[in-house]
Length: 113
Length: 114
Image 1 (tube, each protein chain N blue to C red):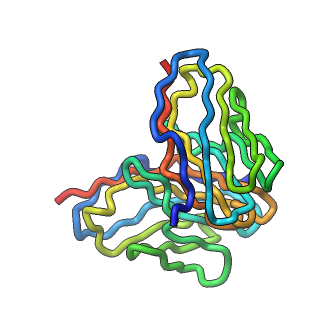
Image 2: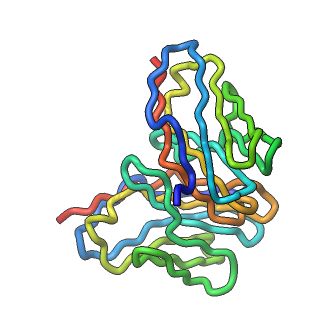
C-alpha cells in the first residue's frame, strides 16, 4: 500500500525567503501525487498534482513541486514566501487501483516578518 | 458555486448521544469521502462511497455509519458518541476515483464530545 511521509512537522521562514517542504512516498508503481494547503478553519485546497510526464509541475499561488523517482520524493517549493502562505500543507499519494488518497501528517508553515 | 457544503459547522455532544453530519456536493461527483483530522495525525479516511447507494469502510470506520441515498449527499452518523470521536470531520468529493483525481473538500465540522 502507498504511504506518505512529511519529515518536518513545523517550518518557520522569513517573508520573502524561499521555501521547500519535503514529501517522501512509498509506492511500487508510478504514483499520483498531490499537495494540498489548509488555512486555519478551512478545508483543504489543491495546490498542484502530478500524474505523469514533466517532473516539474506548477501549481497555484506560485508553488511548484518536483517529482524525483530515484529519491521517492515530491517536494514543494516557492521562491519567495508571503505572509499569507502561513498554513498547514499536506502531501498525498494515490493510485489508479485505489479509491482514496493517503495523506501525510502535514507540515505547519509559520512566516515571520 | 457552493462546491462541497458541510452542516453543521460546529457541534458539542454529550457521551452517548447520536448525531448525523451532512455533506452535500453540487458538482455531480460520483465519489464521496469522510475523513477525520486530529492533531499530528493528518487526515484519516473513515468511509467512502463510489456512487449512489454504495458505501465502503476506510481506515478508521469503527463507531461510524454512513449512507448515500442520493448522489449529491453523503451522511455520516455517530450512533453513540464517545470522547475519542472529538475531531474535525471533512467531507470530500471527486468525479472519478479520488486516488487518481483531485478531491474537493468542504470546510469541516468541528465536533466535541464531552
